[in-house]
Image (cartoon, rainbow, N blue to C red; front, side):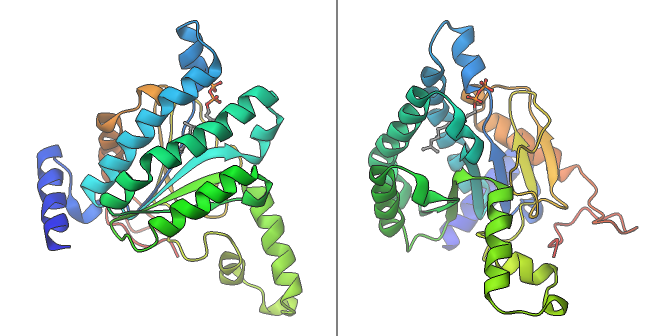
Length: 257
Ligand code: FPP
């Protein structure tokens, strides 16, 4: 553990980053695979396949800097409306990637989990995700969270149903109760959200959890988003003044709840 921490300090020094202000939780909307492929006269699936290198680069950068949680928006509830060939190809890519990468993830100390309506995924995906979660369950360097068949509105509806079923009285429901019924109940809120490809939207992603998150919008298409771009997003984050609705200017990573 000490060796990991020393390596993180060295990396921060090498990249000119403050090790005290590395966001604990980074969330990413990986956008632009289709456009990246189109620019090359290739199918959209080719873009998704090349997006895997960027997933690897972001995981490695997160590990190197000491980010604790990395949430990737890999498949939204709305993505089910894409052509069936693309949906199937994405599911196959997920299974293949898990099979190929799970050992390397475990070796690096990455624990894998999901958020979302994963029961809607093909059974082969569900089985591979379960296996990957089991095989990495004891890893502690970084938690990699794949948002699959996820949307914030789906999650909030599920949370409301669970709160109602819990028998709590209306006057007993507060913001903490809602947070405690979300799929992210055991996670700190993301401090930084990155969206690639020049789009400036949240797209139904962690709406509740991102009340005070800093946003970094990169013009780079996801398959071109490498380690340097990830580091650049962290640098941008470290230059922000976070006030959480108060008057105090703070450059410290105060927990937002
Ligand atoms: C958005 O680009 C990207 C997606 C909907 C899928 C992202 C998925 C991956 C990169 C693979 C993830 C796999 C693992 C194992 C995490 P887009 O298709 O909307 O691009 P466009 O806006 O240019 O059309």
